[in-house]
Length: 331
Image (tube, rainbow, N blue to C red):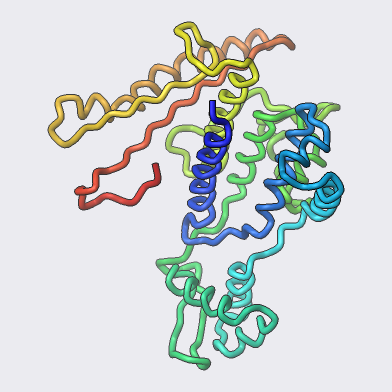
């Protein structure tokens, strides 16, 4: 197995996913911390698998001393999530109500002027900011909440659902670990944890918070972040579990693993409807089993040695090149 090629391909697809998330809903999420975060998390995971620092440093192609200094420097600042220039300019315009271009350039004089102008152009093109006039006297105003193009405010339930998913998947987690992982405001985190406990979605124990279940109902208008994370984590965990067992092939009686099928169909194909209905049919088949297991566990309780079996389903549709309604979708 050519591990290097496989790693490169997975990183590439992961960056595609991150790019789509960072620009979803017209926003531009700050990514300045990302490179350090990836390095730091990868280092911690490699060392957790028993590798010594000298070996890890060699894997990154750097001297041990340089490696130690880099880890120390990053670990001291990893909790900082600096605002991107895009976010800072947008926030300034929101705070001013209406502001001239020359005032914006003065406010961000320490930043690269070309980058500031590019951000202003992007904000206007994204529909988040209105512009009237041209040149230095052009006036900028953030889109009002009542305007047609305004984005809906963030729902606190989205944060609640994400924290619930994180605790269910990786718990028990204590408050300090959650604060580090989420970089959330302390008061907002405490309020969310209290609400989750009151709702019965999580429980507080001496070793941290636990959750015995996690569900994002089909059709729910909140929690897509948690659902995406849940699906991605399930897929990665299955791959890691199989690799950890030293297994690189599938056998008929597998209990850990995955399979992928692709179907090339077109309008009028005799199996068109059958293929498109696969996801809904599989969901309908799995849901009653999960409900029965949950009901039994709620009635009888779960023993400490209970085994968690996670099944993940996914389906993607990539329209053909000649489809007039087709959107560019990475494969």
